[in-house]
Length: 378
Image (cartoon, rainbow, N blue to C red):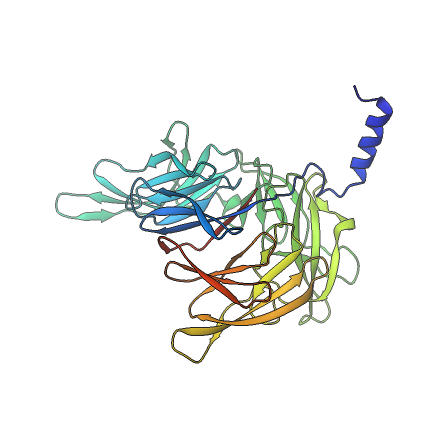
């Protein structure tokens, strides 16, 4: 049994840790999941650049793919949009097949959204009624679907107003977090507001409000905190913006003041890709993190692309490089240590650039890539 004084000391040390570090186990392994024609998903290990698993969908070609909030499953629309299959990513197996077919009708599933709790979905369905002499296209509808009983609730024309825009499942999987000017907490059963994380009000005189950009550094899996890059518009000189990084304490529902990093004038951070330890960022396009595109190079079928490496502790650019690769591709992921970037666009190839953003190799997959790369850290 631990001595009481030792226990008190351990608790005291825990309280001094940043909220983002408490009860948070950083991931150590990164895997890619690539959905490809004709109706299957591959597991790809960026350490070895090899396919390590594969599963074919039960009902043929896929039409839409959603990664679950806990990053452990995929919800895949198949069967001419009448089925939703659940892929368990750990075992690379189809563990459930939910049919939305009805007698005398053709169903078209357009969207699947997981509801906090993990046992319900919101599903958008377009139905086509088969009449004797014609087909009647019915108005699209949303239904609340219970996975356990495979039951559809009463149809709705739209999603509930409280979660219609910017709604994400909270990191603990229990609530809706709606990202607009502020982050509003919504109960998934009553759909009533339970709290708010205020971002839009200036923290100090002379400052503007915060706007969060990009994805949560903790991949929505840290129950204690979010970590975001923020942007701020100068309240006087409106054409000037600043950026930085902060943690949002999900226990106090406030920005953790000890975590705020101010990186100065904004470099137009958009969507970028991070190393598994969140210390290195890689984006495409010169002078910005997460820009896009490349210029056409000499020689048919080639383009010159630019990639940039950033230090995500300081917000400063570390290096920039250019490479000539086949045209119509864009950056889709980086390896765990960010020493390799992966570019996709069409066909079955992954183009790989090295840490200096020079061409390294091309990896051929056993199927045509259709949905980019889903990155899962564990």
